Length: 393
Image (cartoon, rainbow, N blue to C red):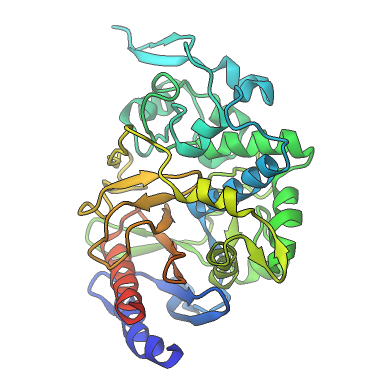
């Protein structure tokens, strides 16, 4: 299997860095529940310095942070410390102060009213609480561009205190929900989110290259961000770095990691919560996190409202999709051969992963390319996933 994977996957990695509109570099890996089956790289960490990509290159993993935060929250739930359906304001009062946006008045000022329904942690984990992102929602973008709300990239408490976009629990909207879930988890655990992750996930899984604050070794291996230009060329942005002494450990997007480390996290799920004889998640909790929790609420496509950060997002349009506690789940097989019931998600700088527990396979694809859903990076990932699935089924 390892040899076959190398034969079919190496050319895909080479292709995305040699394409007419290439990505700078990529690292990709595949794992089953026992071991890494494939790990390789192509291209450069930084096209301005021509630093070569390596298997242990470090990436800002953006929203693939969310699954790790959710796992810590589910561990608190298992211990009986977190009631998913209690008002989240019982844990963090500030969330109870958020108001619902009902459009803008003729002067362009936000019309705000108190919500009729309390936000719960379950809503936060399902993205039904009402939070958004300015790069995926034009109303939210208006709040940040015209009304002084800071971007979530600042990792500040102020950036999370934006109005809700609808009554909690009534719609699905992708946004800063998991940042708030991280704050709930911190309050319950009595420690910063990064420390809880370290103790409850990174240490047991031996994930030594994953953190909110880069170690000197991680800093040396950090991959630069690259911005796609209108003509298809790339510009390296080596100064782009997430806040290193963040006010808030952003559970929605703040981690740095390596592909090798993330494959260890994927193995935790492939092993149904058990690693090295340690049970980090109970089977019953796993079921909660594998089933669509949206009922009759539909996931939306996401418009790219800040074009430098994201294109329009409609991934796997051929399949019905839902959201579980922590992951997107496809309810039908995708064109890339992802079976129904597979969980996964992505990160803003064109990072993508999937976890197929039924067939004991998962993968992670990492670049540092903006905007999101970059055609070369995304189509490269789909080809990668399809090749793995065709070999595995």
